[in-house]
Amino acid sequence: MTPSAVTLDGLCKRFGGIVVAQDIHLTLEAGSVVGLIGPNGAGKTSLFNLISGAVAADSGGIYLNGRRVNHLPMHARARLGLSRTWQHIRLFPSLTVLDNLVVAPRLYAGESIVKCLFGAGALGRGRAALVERAMAQLAKVRMTHAASRYPTEFSYGKQKLISLARALMNDGNALLLDEPIAGVEGPAYDALTEVIRDEAAAGRAVCVVEHNISFVKDLCDRAVFMFQGRIVRTGTVADLMASEELTELYFGR
Amino acid sequence: MEYAASALILIGIFVILATSFNLIIGFGGLMSIAHPIFFALGAYTSGLATTRLGLPIGLAMPMGALVALAASVLLSLPALRVSGDYLVIASIGVQLGMLQIIKNLDWTGGPGGLVNIPPLFASVGWRPAFAYVTLVLVSALAAILLVRWIVSGDYGRAITAMRDDEEAFKALGRNAVSIKIMLFAIGSGLAGYAGGLYAHYFLYVTPEQFEILYSSAMLTMVVVGGLGTIWGPALGAVLLEALPQAVKFLDFPSSVMAPVQGILFTGLVLFFLFAWPQGLVGVRRALHRPEPEEEVDEAGAADGAGAGAR
Image (tube, rainbow over all chains, first blue to last red; front, side, top):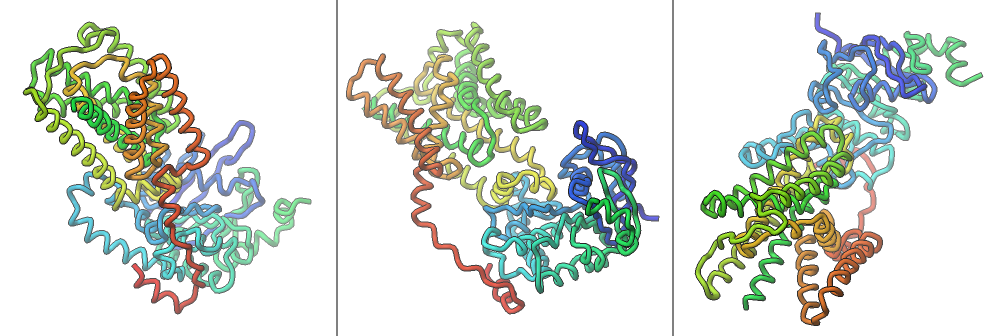
């Protein structure tokens, strides 16, 4: 049996008195889309930060494809095939949209000055392939026309689409998306839903933090409800939203 | 003639220092103030290797650069692995501590300095001076071109992304620490090489020439010329080296000159950081910046056009 793309085993994290993760057990399987829902401050983004390595866990295990990665820095986890987006986008404003994607694959030869110096020919060929790959990701989110422009020339929603395309450059098997749909509307909304479905169908494990419940309902096979750093319940989106208790937690009394 | 040559050599050396300091603070975004000590390590290594060990200058000068480079790796490896912020503190410590060591060892000449360093070109007359000026200016140009090569292309793209958003950069799988160590090492190595150039022309080095205050002079050159630009620091170095040289003709007593220079440097940094943070080079660029285009609305039809644009 192949191990799960992401496994969290009793994960705990607190900042002083604030518990952001308390005994979290969660697996993300290849080919499925899991929705992470809950009110603001429930610990959804913190969970992404723990998995990606931006924040170190206090206790518990984080496994990528069966390998324990607690001790690995952020970039090493990304190289194992973990990719993420942020609620606040975080594109590189000084680079063109295309270059934002070109620096984004898991292994980028341009990161090593030695390879730049001695592998010049190889890198030149690699560059053409990289550009082609980047354009293919931009095409998925229908943003190829943005390639030679700068991210800040585009609306918030379109920057979201570009940041998803950038995350796809990793070509890994785990994709964490933090509010991918917020600010995206119209035809872009459909494009985004389609892309996420396609990525899951291609064998990636996708986890989506989202407040737009109809989007979660459309997209997710399974939803996880978080509250105060705990997983309160897991089930189908319809089941979770039918629960009066959870609705109360979500909206307050 | 002699005066013009040494002024040009000093300018060239400061062009190398400002350019390499800019690689570290401007392009790498690394807050270090220890640049003078790497300059010192190059000068002292090369000077000591020739006077005490009798090594040929052609070997001693690259050795100076390598020692500075190695020392910078030893400093940045622990500091950058923890957090970039520690580099500032570590660099202050190294700058002050190393200089104290140099001051207090007999072998380095102590506070009196290292004398009788052999010249690179030994004969007398205008030829050696001319040759040395050429060497320094070619070296300065080479340093600028090296920095330009580093910060453009694939590696430069990574550096820019790292400076824009380090966390996003790391989350994509990029190793920010190794890039920072690399930039710090190359910048410090260049400063060490400049040290060698200094030692074998002026033939005399003392600890005072590498005091922490010189990092503010270098910072002024970088900021005035243009932080994070290719030619800016060179321009800043030329202006700020030439300016005091020009003022020298006014023949103020040195008790007036020193404070005037300090006030000049501080004033310039403050002025540029507030009024022209892009520096002189940036000002020119801002005037020539093309108008941003209107956003093309996303549509299936625009896709084909965009794909061919690059």
